[in-house]
Length: 359
Image (cartoon, rainbow, N blue to C red; front, side, top):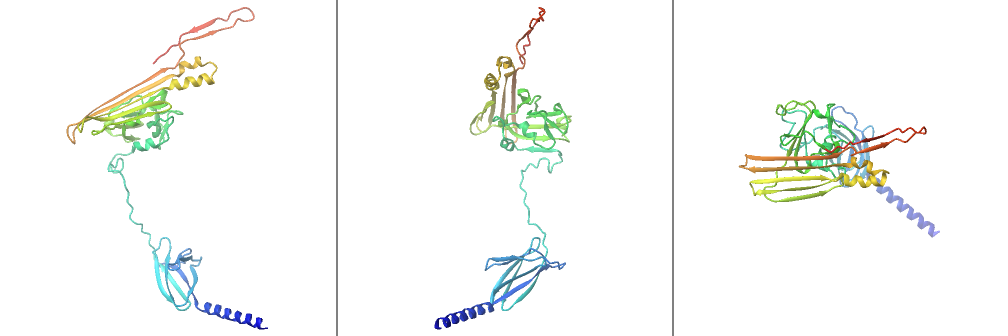
């Protein structure tokens, strides 16, 4: 009997404590609306900074939460496109708030960073693109060969002249309607290996200016496009050497001063070994590799060089050299076809031809 009385006493004490604690809690509720139209704002954020607690308003813009009686709270009310409001109040009883948010669609200052050249943007030149050579070198390279012409094929309005070909067709024009200039000189053939590889050495290029229309008068008349390529100057103070080995070709690049601070040189050379790679493959996969051997005798090399002499900070004299050659033997040196004798004893004859060709 004493134990039952003790449990009853504990229950009464706990119930009294709970009731007292509940009596110390009050409700803070309200609505969040637009200050002009009075429209309820659904999804507005109500945040109590001290408690790190928050909730969002309902469809009718209402919200409700409970806090300890007599406590000072700080409410932060925010909504996208509106100015955030902060309310500080001491809650002594159930409180209802009406919060009207003011629209604020102003964006902060936007800073745009670009090169000082402003090529094709602020100038009167239209349909012009300045392609950074660093961006070209960052593209995936087939067989380790950085290809400038294939990088241009990724621009709007430009497509390859053939599958896997380095040539370009601009806005439906023909291949020979493009003008390619290398530091002021015309480059009539910009491909190697029957058009598979570009003849432009990326190690020597400083800038690429690509015109797809509204060509400047200094370039003369062209129908499709103009590609103006600038060759970079060599270092006037120190020497640099770079060697690269790829699956298709190898290259070497050297630059430095001739007279320090006055005269510099920049030289780069490439040489391929296409036949050395393809012929062993033919011997493995083709039953008559000798018949195909003449077709694999395709190689190329090119040399780019630039010498610059500075007379002053504004006056310079430069000389540019480009030498390129393709070695191609695209036909067999000879072929023989002998016809079998028919069952009637007649000889169909034989044929011998010499189709040698070497470019």
